Image (cartoon, rainbow, N blue to C red; front, side, top):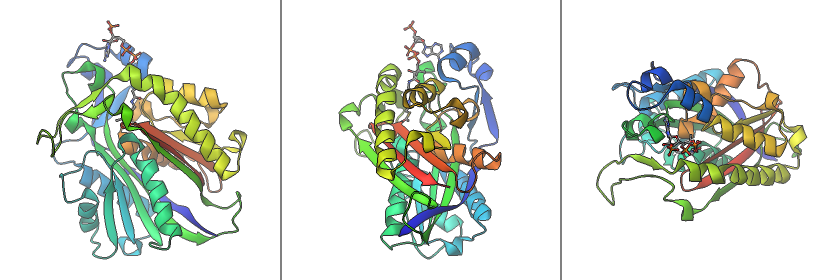
Amino acid sequence: MIRSQVMGVGSALPRRVLTNAELALMVDTSDEWIVQRTGIKQRHIASEDETTASLGEAAARAALAHAGLSPDDIDLIILATSTPNNTFPATSVEIQQRLGMRHGYAFDLQAVCSGFVYAVSVADLHIRGGMAKRVLVIGAETFSRILDWSDRTTCVLFGDGAGAIVLEAAETEGTTADRGILASALRSDGTHKDKLFVDGGPSTTGTVGHLRMEGREVFKHAVGMITDVVTATLSAGGVSVDDLDWFVPHQANLRIIDASAKKMGIAPSKVVATVSDHGNTSAASVPLALSVAVADGRIRKGDLVLIEAMGGGFTWGAVLLRW
Ligand code: ACO
């Protein structure tokens, strides 16, 4: 059985760090409020010369180096982002050009915070369908560019960054002991589209717009939706929650992460949380967290890892993989 195996992981963060204390000088908020409600202590913010494409390129290069591969080895680039450099062409194509690749194909995928989980499952289908042997899956965002910096209810929550993995086709036994992606589940429900959105776009206002969110409403739905899709993915993969070595959730809010893990019976010691350092980096949050946990030696080859995300749309999903 062909499975998509992780060959490398990498990440990139903007140089500038913005602390809660600095934010408290910009809007009516405090370090105490932000930490208590979200767990966020700081986030990275892109400078003028840093873009979704440049951060995505840096994360891609780091993942390729970690895999011991070069851009020549890649057949497909999927970039998950809601903050592309331009409306078109796709930012993934710009990353392809920056990497010096003139072969293969590249496209962007937009599922807001669930983008990376969606992109991994789509990459898996391209690999198992025989379209591509090696895929670079990137999550890169510059949410700082679509934030309303006078709105304290949203501007304290988000940050910029990028993460990437390289997936490669491998022949396996077809059991849960295989390395690679074992199961995925994706969901969306557009009836919630007005709870978390950007109030601009090419076909409506002709502007880029700003992020708007009914935070309490998102929070209300998050834990139930995450639990549902994780349970479905574990069941499709033929494993139980106790088999998991690592739970790597979307990094939006520590309270959502803790509540979801608790509801599913996942021990806190198995939860990878980086939201305190990065804030919510949308599609970049899961690969950034994976990158941190691999670099510090927590996630090792052969570990059973569950990634999940939930975000605007709403969209949500999960992928079960053996690292
Ligand atoms: N500083 C200080 N006070 C604030 C701030 C702030 N930054 N923001 C809001 N407040 C105030 C509110 O005005 C409100 O005051 P009031 O009671 O006088 O009206 C009070 O704090 C409580 O506000 P709530 O919105 O009820 O606070 P809550 O505990 O729900 O926390 C938060 C807000 C952090 C946004 C939370 O609801 C949340 O995390 N929601 C989920 C967001 C999320 O996960 N998004 C994920 C998807 S992201 C994506 O897809 C792009």
